[in-house]
Amino acid sequence: MKDLVIVGAGGFARETAAAALAGGRRVLGFVDDNPDLHGTVRSGLPVLGPVDHVTGLDADVVVCVGNPRDYTVRQRIVERLGLPTERYATVLHPSVSVGAGSTVGAGTVLLAGTVLTADVTVGAHVAVMPQVVLTHDDLVGSYATIASGVRLGGGAVLETGAYAGSGALIREGVTVGAWALVGMGSVVLHDVPSGEVWAGSPARFLKNVPTLPAAPPVPSVLERQTS
Image (tube, rainbow, N blue to C red):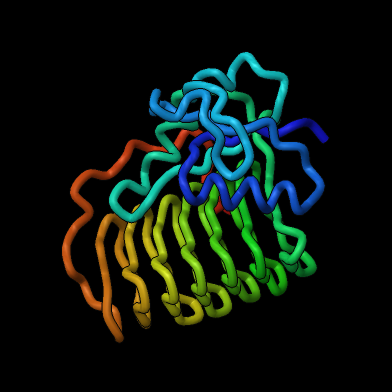
């Protein structure tokens, strides 16, 4: 297992470092494009330089950036770096439970207490925060973000880049479309179209996502399922 470098130095990046260290992995530090952070120490680890610094390092990489105001940035950085898939680590906190038949893609992070019950498929570069439960036959597309405490019923689908806010409950069989956002604490009983923001209990349409990204540079898990 190679050493790990984490892209980003914010909260999610530091949580990922803690998860990797808890699993016995050596973390060299962070890279970040904020020059004020270069040479500083975050959570006991150095900020080594700008993001592009990782291309010259003999280390695995995981991209840990993004927030509800800009949750497409993870895709943009992966595309910008252009690294081969084998350079990307998959980070699972030791407390994560991955049930039979479940798979997790390259560059994906599962933080503490996450449960994949059975036959769950999670794509590449997915961010899964603590105490998330993904139940049987769920599909999570690449670049999705699942905030803490989210629960997905059986057979639910989060398409490429979808964002599920903290504590959201998504009914079995429901699909949240590509790059759609579900607000924190929402109860999602019906399909959410791609590129829309829904919130509430039950969740309802609020607005469209202002700018949708281009197609992702790697196939989504949903595309791989049907190919």
